[in-house]
Image (spheres, rainbow, N blue to C red):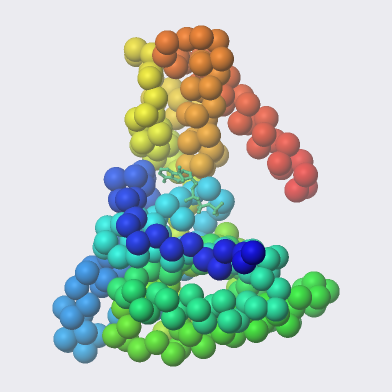
Length: 270
Ligand code: ATP
């Protein structure tokens, strides 16, 4: 049996409607959508379409979601892989997997390639020499750089990569013609949390008068992923008690539960 090389989704349903908040980031990626839809508009004036952009921000803030929405909005296929899969699963074949990925994306172009956790392959070279698989990682990274340098400006494949550690990335990745744009995807403020609640409450049967401002106030420091979790957990808590709708107390219990989980996580780290 063969491990899955990368995910390929030719009919992405995700759109900007699914991404709450992140107005600045959405504005920046809107440009990428335009490039993919109308490349001639830009190249006819002699401009070079960017090949890559880095989505930078804490875990769970919607980087993957945003990248998928770019593909969905531009109606182009979405090829994705995770940097950590490369290091853990594909020992010895990282470089050839990267080559295959770019080959397939080019065949289906215009297309988006998304590399999650790019820091797993894109860490500055020479650091962390104890990890053993370093040569492997460097080969994979070098192949990625080669591929990005190799495709011409009319290839119409744009590579988006996500990281929460832009500071440890090899500077070679950020050079002109590679990931030369950084788009910041931050934790949501209170107003954005309300919008995220709105998105994730859509499928729920809500009790009447549920106060979204209150819920947003109760969740400082929560990421979009945490809020999605709260909504789902609240629905499960309500169901367990045989309720007909999810009410305020279910949300408070869910928030407690998620906070408990977050505290545990932080304890392990520090
Ligand atoms: P990681 O760095 O951990 O991979 P990420 O930034 O890529 O995280 P996503 O995987 O995009 O985060 O987010 C996980 C889930 O959290 C999404 O599928 C979505 O359900 C929810 N979510 C996160 N951010 C948002 C947002 N801004 N709007 C709506 N939902 C969000």
